[in-house]
Length: 211
Image: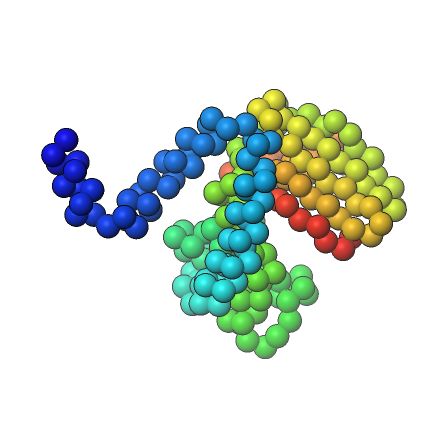
C-alpha cells in the first residue's frame, strides 16, 4: 500500500490518465449497452474529429508518413500512411494519396494534398479503432433494406445492441450507429466475406450530409 501511495504522489496525474483511460474505456464498453453509449460516442467523435484532428494534428501528421503495406477487403496494398502511433488520424482502408488518385483531392503539393485528405476523413481511424466495434457477421441481421433512385433505407442490428441506420431522404444522407452498411452486399443480400480494413471492425458514425 505504501508503494502504491508513493507512486500516486510521484507520477503526474496526466500520466495516470493516459495509462488508465484505455482500461476504463474497455470496462465501460463491456458494461454499458451500445445504444446508451451512442450519445456520448457521437459527442466524443464530433469533438475529436473537428477539434483534436483538424486543429491539433492533421496539419503536421503527414510529415511522419511512411511507405508501408496495408490491407483492405483482403487485398494487400502499398502506399504512404501515418505510423501506428497516429493511426487514430489515418484512413484505415486507404493511403494518404487515395484522394489524388480518385480525383476528390486536387493540388500541386503532395504534403498539402495529404493534409486535405486527412481533413476530408477526419479522425477516421478513431472511429474505427477507438469507438468502433468488432464486426461478427453471424450476430448481425438486416431489419430493413429498400433502395430506389430517390431514397435508400438500411437498418441493421446486432445481438449485443449495436445498430446501423443508413438512409437518404430529401437529398440528405443520415448515417448513425456502427457501419454495418459497408459490409452488406446488395446483390446477394449477404454480408461480405472480407474485412473492411485490416480487421473485422465496423467504425462508429454520426453523420448528416448531402446525398
